[in-house]
Length: 537
Image (tube, rainbow, N blue to C red):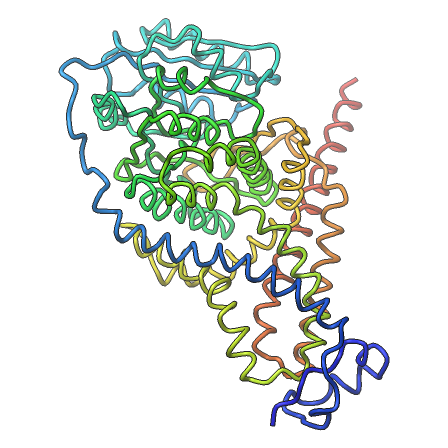
């Protein structure tokens, strides 16, 4: 016999330890207590938030469906070709990239394209030893006959967007290709992509990212899986159905006329690439996605770098939504384009919603102590299928769809992927809040390492690492809160909830202890450098 849920106030007033020791199937209190107003005040916002989150869960299923139907519309080759190749400018925006810049320049100068039609711009905003080191390398390559130029700014006005805009003033190419410092494009990159611009309506050609250090550690495996969801499924689903999708800021080409027609590079958001993408597509420019062309890149190898990158992306995309979403919704484009644009610009709102849901979890668990299997089947199961299970299906299917992917390997790393998502919750909630409040911050670089053949990374100077601050201690509090929930779930025989809650504990503790460990190592490195400096005096 199933009992009605006890009111929350009853649990606070009575002996909690006596109540949680009873079985979920104990019907002693059946029919005696009904939900009170306070219980509904907890349950209403809890299930409202879950309903909104379920919308994004359903969108993941729709993306898979869009991929299956849209992949046949992705061109296997350019539909037409240039009779004479156009001039191309390659732009390489840099900021303190000492460890990877040599590899980048060596790769770019080997690009298979007529030298008389090629211009390479090194756009360096560096404030450390990267500046003289890169300038010397560029001079050596130019002396060897390569069409390469060095541009160094003494300020970071506009950050990456400002550097790209500055480079356009002297760009000679009809098309520009952009590569971040950690990318290693294949030698035939331009030959396989430039002919898509033979169609004068094409404004952007985006290629698929792959990863030099995917197997470096668990975190890089998880990041690769997350990005595969974007590049394998989302881009194909959007591009294959004529929906708006974004240039990813690197490993792609842009028509200079399109950049200027759309209003140029603007730096009022941290994701200048998505900002320009939507402005250009609203102007009628067509974007092409070429998943068969892979451009290897380097993933952050520690949690700090990962969170810095994700913070910038979450805040920037939310800023783009604040800036452009109203215009997209009012534009004459089809409703399905508007809906997908909304889903694309707004998903990071899920992070503050998850904070609210997690804060309500324990009191809601107590309120619903005597929930029977009928209510679980009717209410909880649909939410689980649309939220938790959609994440599982989405990223597993991305590995199935990836030519070199492994489903079993993806299943193995799914707990880590879910925990990594939890590790981003607090920092990305802050990112969303800052974007919605209009708080502007600097473009913080993602630390990049030189990956060697043995899988090791170069030592990073302590000045590249930021202090942990209060965030890890807040994450420890959240992790402990979920640990209490696990104890409660076990004591109330809710064994199904315990494994799910454990991912929150692992995620928050992982993030907190990783930050504290990095700060401790940085402090030791600083102390060691200080002592060496004193000894040398």
